[in-house]
Image (cartoon, rainbow, N blue to C red; front, top):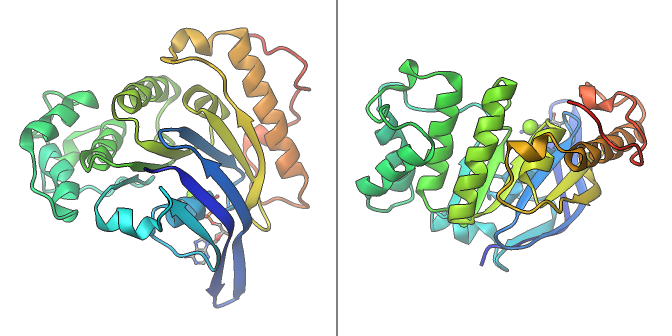
Length: 278
Ligand SMILES: Nc1ncnc2c1ncn2[C@@H]1O[C@H](COP(=O)(O)OP(=O)(O)O)[C@@H](O)[C@H]1O
Ligand SMILES: [Mg+2]
């Protein structure tokens, strides 16, 4: 059981220069085995929300339940897989050992066959004994995803895992992530700045707004799976991306002086206009 229920969640950070309301009044119901994308301007609380789900921070109001229980329990059982943006791998350890580390940290015995399976799953066959310094950025990110998957997570939390990758590699990784997710079916929440990535991967796209950070809009993505590169070239895909972009722009535009709004905040076409071209 790993459906997510967030009720009236708030997070206020107390800092030297006063308080930051990172999240306020967040309500969210995400079914078990679902794939959700979180999207929104920088600073709107996406990472904070992910940290609440992962029991890495506690809400200052409201509550978070995973499978009807506080996420703390799931974390204690080592069933939450987390891959955050800056893939912190141990530089002196091999790919295999870096992956195994998360299993050890969760207090379980390492199944090396399983680790090798994950190495293959994320397409790093032949690099199992390489050190992180011998890998490209994209490969390192795949190691951190494998590490998150190694605990057989019921809840998988990915914070901009492909943010540093070029478009082509990102597309490959999106297809790979979907394949892994179809195999493991962890309830997954992924933070991304890319509307295209969100629409490609997710069952639903949750659009957040800032000041205070909150959920502004939710867009369901109806495309059947497995989704492939062909989908990314289709008119339906582009139309839905346009729609999400428009709603994201509305979410950001609804605030005075949003800080460092992403490029997607540029005037977006009306949803009715069918997306064309790339
Ligand atoms: N540990 C922290 N202490 C104080 N403020 C924080 C902390 N973490 C995040 N914040 C603030 O909370 C807000 C939301 O941050 P974050 O969740 O990182 O947003 P996002 O991931 O959407 O960019 C920002 O204003 C940020 O500066
Ligand atoms: Mg963030």
